[in-house]
Length: 331
Figure 1: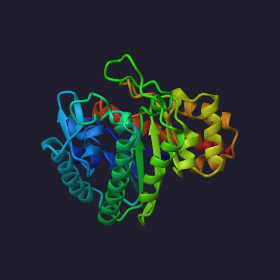
Figure 2: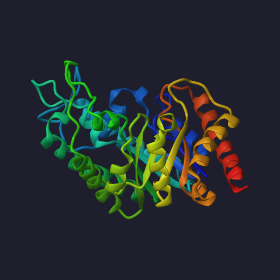
Figure 3: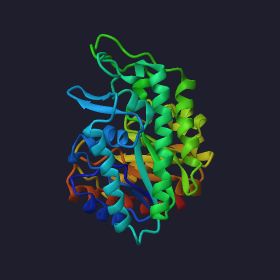
Figure 4: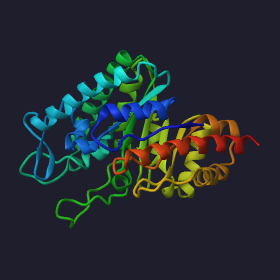
């Protein structure tokens, strides 16, 4: 049973984070994200740094603009320098690499249309289509660069922490008096499918995951889009989502179980993590080999708010728990 991280890590030193993760995640290395370096390295900014859509950073956050501003250009430069460092430090890494980008619906819910409106892109269907297309092109281009430079098998992860609010029509507008209406399900499927198609056309890409650390993950929409990995916070696993996970695993998709909370800095013991994982897996009542081959243990979300030592201990404990879970399942 594999273990991986989900992206964000403590501190501002990309080289140090990469060194640590190479040691801790030998089979599925998660590209480190460092929000502590500033907004251009945080979830939204780092993805905008890849897009061929001009944006600017204003007092109310990221906005569409007539041309890229200094912040978006800085986000693009981070990718270039980080790739140089990552390539140097992973020369001996023989496992797969997973890189995370912000998904189209979280981007559309976080980036505003150009002045003077205060609405987000999600209010404009045409803007959402343009965004999904730009993200598909950027994800495919990045995948091509990474596979060529690193010589690895690659997994692309789309972070969609607000997808539950999108499908549930609970995202507030700027005034807070209204909610953005939910997009048509086919629109969500099409946007994801466009990215899946573009990324999986790159030789060396093993698939695309969608990750949400929030409630109401629409697993059935992800399946219809061709996504082959679900990464979830187990606190939000209700009976319907558990059933979806069972179906997903039966179809040989990957399920990432976020069994360790990350909103508080507390490292669960190996026994706690083992119990949490088995508590989910035994309910599924699936073949033990299917579970061991297709379930990945992860933190529930990123570790940017942690310290290096605690983050390392958590990943070490997840590895020990994965071994114990596999032993228990095999009995």
